[in-house]
Image 1 (cartoon, rainbow, N blue to C red):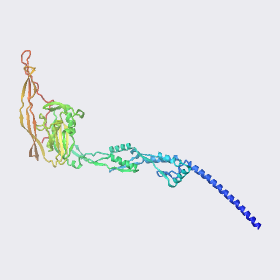
Image 2: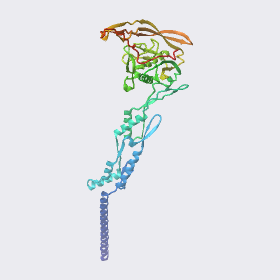
Image 3: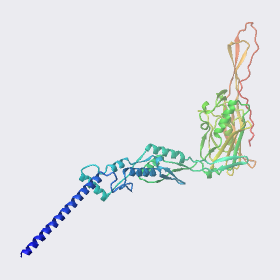
Length: 488
């Protein structure tokens, strides 16, 4: 019995020894683990690498150093900004670097957040924040911004580059005739709409936009211009021995109506085409008829251009709706066939009542003003000429007036008498050489000018009479003759 008892005591001692050993070992291991855990937590909280679960624009930054991550982010930024934004137009597509559109990316706030993640609060709060990061993750992104002034400048440059005006078709004259050069449509950009659409697309991370431009057609359609197939009227007047200023005015006025296309139903004012008669616009001083007298004024000579145009319009059977005679019958056309212009009072206006466009050519050739009118010869297949007759002559009277400052016996012509006239013009229509009809046209009135002669009454020292002195007659400052080379 005692033997069994001893064995039990021995076994208990052994168990106690082994139990104590294992308890000691477990406590030691636990202490080591606690120390290791504390060191791990300390290292974790003081880490200089990015925590697991942090990404930027979808790139996993876990375990990277901050400097490496920032370099990666900068490279991503430059890569993104170098990408092109595509604008799609009806006929082509073109890409533009995002930076040119005022688009910009900023990662400064994101980098600060990554660097400061779980760096504040108690140890327990920071550990919990890190644990939540491992479970859920955090993805940072660029802050996108737009330089609106730069974007508007870009839109303005697009409007200049792509907002084309329509190109009008035109006639190109050659030695053997003319060719018709077709026009093309233009595009007008709605700049404000384009700006707003671009702004939304860029902020929305889109990389393309369809640009809707408003199509603008030429004023003259290619189809209508192709109706012009030949000359339907022409007239010429001789410029005579005009002064340099007068000739330059005529040349300028011809250039302002040369190649003018008048659409069906369109009304044209000659004065409007001439613009302001100023030296700044190139007009020179030259002789013109004002109030029944030849005087020098700016633009002198353009009445001969308007008269030549008027006669060409008559021959093309284009509707003339306003026409005026001069106060003195012009020497370069028959009486009753002139067309005077003066800003504010006299104009030459016409309207194209044909169903096809007409084109006016006006130029100078061998000292002649020539105006040609082109249209559809298949429709206007007849000729028109203008004839005029003087229907009344209004006699002028010469009056004498005593002048005490002029020596007795002397006479001085102040104003030469000039008879007045009334004239009637006619449009004569012909086809195949035969007169079809004669139609009364414009009437003209040229007022008379009574003459005035001063008679001297001042006594002479010797009491005798001096022979009468009559100066030369009042005359134009320029000699102008006329030859109608193309009258039919």
